Amino acid sequence: MNESFIIAHDLGTSGTKAVLTDMNGTIIASAESHYPVYYSPDGGAEQDPEEWWKAIVETTHNMMRTADIAPEKVAGLSMSAQMVGTLPVDVDGKPLRRAMIWLDARAEAEAEFLRNKTGFNHITGKSPSAKVLWIMRHEPDIYARTHKMLDCKDFLQFRMTGVFATDQGMAGATSYFNRQTRSWWPLVLDAMELPVEKLPEPISSTDIVGELTAKAATELGLVEGTPVISGGGDLPCAVIGSGAISPGHSHLYLGTSAWVIASTKEFISDVEGIFASIGIDDQSYLLGGEMDNAGGCTKWFLENLMGKEDEAAAAEAGKSIFQYMDQLAAEIPPGAEELIFLPWVWGERAPVNDDNVRGGFVNLGLNHTKGHMIRALLEGVGCHLRWIFNTVESAGVLQKEANVIGGGATSPFWLQILADITNIKLLQVEQPLDACARGAAMTAAVGLKYYKNFAEVEQTIKLTGAEFTPNQENREVYDTLYKNFRSLYSPLSSIGNNLVPPVNDTV
Image 1: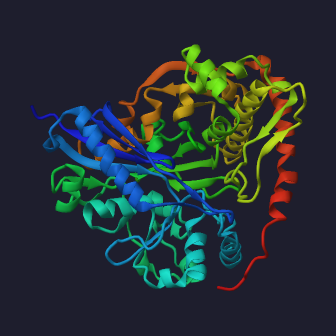
Image 2: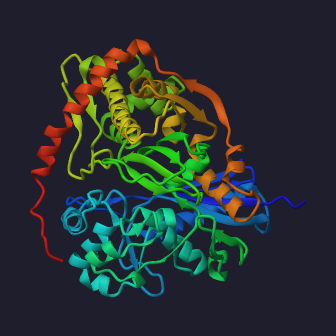
Image 3: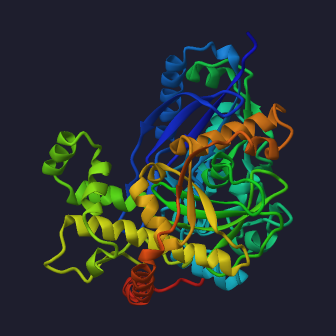
């Protein structure tokens, strides 16, 4: 039997998942492992790269044990990973500090410096360019020992192959990579005074980074020499895994963060508030925006405002705690009786670059219950996604429907709320939690020549058939909610940004 399989690792913010697929992207087996984020009061958000690697090793063994297939049948490995991280490593590839992940917002002064130097207003305190400059300014001893500045996927694939490389999509999110010429950008590097030699080689997502070393193969329980295909960031991999690959198609991801992405044939220069990016397919580009916290808001609510009595009630009803939260919210009418939730709980990325704004409940009254708060939370995320959809449309990319993936895609109740608020028809993708990993696996399948191109891959992605069409009866209440939601950004932003220290305009 010559059947072959692909291993895809999906490295997220809260944990990693190892997934085994066949060449059609069908999930055969998977395993998950979790690790923490280390927050600091100054806006820092870090993760330990060794905890990432430990999770990669653990999930690979557990997944292979579940699948019960011989390692020799693994044709290749690939990866989908969180983006916009910054990790300095020495000449041996050893981390010199914990990674500053995408949520890390402490480099706002450096971002302001770079905006002034380059004229690039899209650079924020969460941009790798600003975070690298922060390390240069605040940790000069670490910078002096730095051989390469890597994102998380780059580091993990170095551990697998001994090769320093990054894919063009990950590079494009750094602010120091020219997405049109697909090369490192001297304009920004000169402003940072960062030598290009400290950066990994940018390659295509379908390129083979290298082969598993003997050491990595032993740790992972796989075969030495197995090819490692680059893959990509979670965002472009999600495009492949969602099936919204061809130009003109869109998808919505609902995870810890959320994003709206449209595939485009041509590069569209950045519109204020959203970004243009490089797709997995070298022939395509992406246009969209990401909000920092969507499912992250529901997780925060669960951990801080749901009690043991709720867990008991959910168990008695035979529901998960998230299904029980949907049940409570479903008892409340659309608009949550004028209670508004603002989901900017750790800054925001699109369509506003604002690391210091914070969220909250507004118009809270004694008449409001826990159910009102949950419904307002779900609707608040919906209002922010509508803001992103509208901004993408302002760039000339019309979206009437979108494929939905991520953990939030398993909630029909939330999907209907989102369809009603955004006025976008939402289509549920099969196995929505595995879309990023599936996208990485199918990228490997193209890289290994099992498919000629991604047009063939698009035909393999399946939808459940569940469609969520906007309910026009709720149009008036949600239009009013959205108007009020938008009016609250400026006052909250002014509070958060008044707390920001003065900008240091020197390197």
